[in-house]
Each structure stands twice: as structure tokens, then as C-alpha cells.
Length: 480
Ligand code: ARG
Image 1 (cartoon, rainbow, N blue to C red):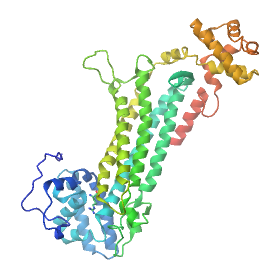
Image 2 (image 1 turned 45 degrees about the vertical axis):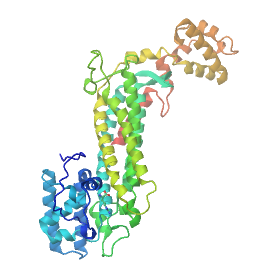
Image 3 (image 1 turned 90 degrees about the vertical axis):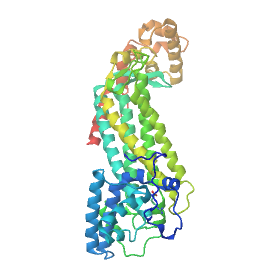
Image 4 (image 1 turned 90 degrees about the horizontal axis):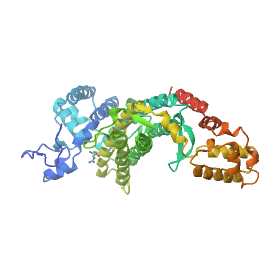
């Protein structure tokens, strides 16, 4: 680990190595300024991408006759060694060399001499860093999309096992109508599906090549940008050099997609937390996602979902950081953009870890089906079914609504649920609404059951168990 704390000894040596841009300066920067302006200790995460980008650039320079074949061979040999040094943790990252780009270039020159010095021909760190970030982010997006798939697969398994498990559906956190637990979980499948789409869409705009834009205006060398794009797997080149080196909208989009994904998971987390509370008692979470209390021996706390909820704030913060970073920046590159990396890396790390944990946590949900069903007898969950029954027998909906409201009031007075009334009691309860009571017949009791209510919502997107099953089949087919 490299010490990046403010108190770290920054080692001002009397003979400072020459900066890559030092020729026109008459005094060195202070240690504080050096530390303030350097990014090497966080942007060295892009070392692999930096090397990949440099190799493609060098190959293009050689193909175009801008550097010699021997130069290319030297660069390739040097980079192979540097890559090994980094992987083995042997590479000496140096604050004096500011960032990942200058550190690697300097080491390359130390290893292979003049060929190393030729690598930067027709290139600037401005188009280099923009390329590195895009390569890095593309890898991160691919990982995230795959992890969303893992999460979805496990979610579908739990939904399938509970396609017909009744629970109360809520609005305003009040019991509203019966749904199945599988249907409820499938709501999160739909959210995660849109999340995956958003990342895939964002990837299209990430996957364009800035290299060749040089510092801001392009370069006078006869470069071949399409060749570099193909080498690096980019779909196309960025078509304006000023824009290519300066905009980070693709990173902002990534953070926005991440914020939405975390927002969705924070909603599920909040539900897991509520459901696990003894007041609900709908589920239990596997012990490996919970912790105890140091003072209250009975406690089993849902720490992981709570942290997902909390980390959503952190991811939202990164989105705001990047938006604010970009706002009002004049063209073209400004050093402000160096600040894009930490929020971006942190966002990707947080999303990746959250998805990995969530995929496992979903499988650790133990459903307490009896409690879910029990909760359905407490909130008049089939009241809408009673109203719909009256409407189907010819009563206008507003009258049916009023008749059922009276029945609910009577049930509340009696401390019972609607299905517990006899036919006569139900008729008496709605006697004040003309035309209501005589619509009631014995078949109402089938309608008022949980299964009757669930089964009647039998259309695409509805909660009937058959529809939930169909939704799961559809979802599995989409996942492939
Ligand atoms: N470390 C810099 C960054 O992350 C690289 C680009 C620096 N360019 C410059 N002209 N100083 O943005």
C-alpha cells in the first residue's frame, strides 16, 4: 500500500528528477503543491488501460511510419516488463511523476531509451487520460451488467418459489390489496432490467475513442484514428477534438445509472428491513447478512440492507460531484477533470460490491408465509374486490365504493374482517346505499377470499399466480 495520507513523507530530494514539462520553469513546486496536484496514487488504477492505450497508439505510429519498427518493438518489450512489475506489485509509483501516465512513460524510457521518448508523439495526456477512463469504465460497465444478471437470476428463483404466496400489497404503507410475494419481487426484477438497459446504453457513449485529439486541436502527424479505435475495441472515434478531451458526460451518465440502481436497491433494502422487523415478521434474513448488538442480546440487525440504503447516499453524492465538476467548464481540457476519478472509481466499487452481496442475500431470504397471510386479514384487503363484485352486478362504481366503505366501518365496529360477515349482516351493513344489498349473493364469499382476489387479477402485469409464473418465464427467456 502506498501512503497517501497528508502527513506522509513526500521526500523532497535536493535533486528532483526532471518533470516531463519542466524546461520552462525556474523554480520547483512545493511538496504541498506537488501532492495537491498529483493523481498517481489514485489514477494508477488505470495502469492496465494506460498500457493498452499506449500500445495501440505506438502500433499506429509505426504503421504510419511516424516511429520505426524497432521503436515499436522496444516499446512493446518495455511495456510488457512494466505490466509485469505492476502486477507483481514491484512498480515504484512516484509522486514526482504526477500521474499514472508520466510514471509509466518515465519507466518505459528508463527501460528502452529513446523509443520510450517517442511514444508520446502525436498524443497528449489530455486525450490519453480520456481514453484510459473510457477503457476502464467500459470494463466496469461489463462487470456491472453481468452482476445485475446474477442478481436477477437469484431473484427469479425466489419469485418462482413464491409465485402464489399471498401477502398484503401496500399503498401509503397501509394494507391495500392482496398480491403475491413473487409478484412483489418481480417489481424489482423490472427495475433491475431497466438498470441494466441504462448501463448498456451508457456503454455506447463510453465506447468512443478520444485518442488522436491530442491536447485539444488534433495533431499534425499523419495519424490513423480508426485503426486505434479498432485496436482498442471502440465503436467509433470522438468526432471533435475539443469535446473529446474535455467532456466527462459519459462518466456522469454512468454515475446517474448507478444512482438509480442504488435507489432501487435502497427501496428493496428498506422493505427487507421492515419485513424483518417483528412487527411485520414477513421474512428472516440469513445470519451472514446480519449482526448482533453489543448490549442487547436479542438483537439481529439487518446491517447489509441498511448499508445499501446508506451507500445510496454516497453514490448520489458522487453524481452531484461530477455534475458540479463539469458545470461551467470552458473548452477544452481543464485540470478540474482530474477530480473525476475518485467519485467514479468509488461509484463503480460500491455498485459492484453491492450487487455481489445482494445476489447472495436474496437467496438467504426465508419467507414466513403464515405471517404474510395473517397480515392480509387485518386491513380489509379484499374491500376493492367487494366493490368490483357490486359493479359487475350493475351498481355504479361510486355507489359500490360507498356501500363497501359502510361495510368496512361495520366490520371495524365488530372487530372482524369482511369475509366473517354472514350474507344478511353484509346486506344490513350497506342498507343505506340504494340498490347495493340486493346485488349480494352467496358467490360473494369466493370473491372475498385472498385466493379469489389474487386469481381475478389475471392479465399481463397482474398479480394472479398464473401471471406471475408467466412473468418469470418471460424474464428467464430475456436473461437467456
Ligand atoms: N492527471 C491528469 C488528469 O487526470 C492527466 C491529464 C493532465 N493534463 C494536463 N494538461 N495537465 O486529468
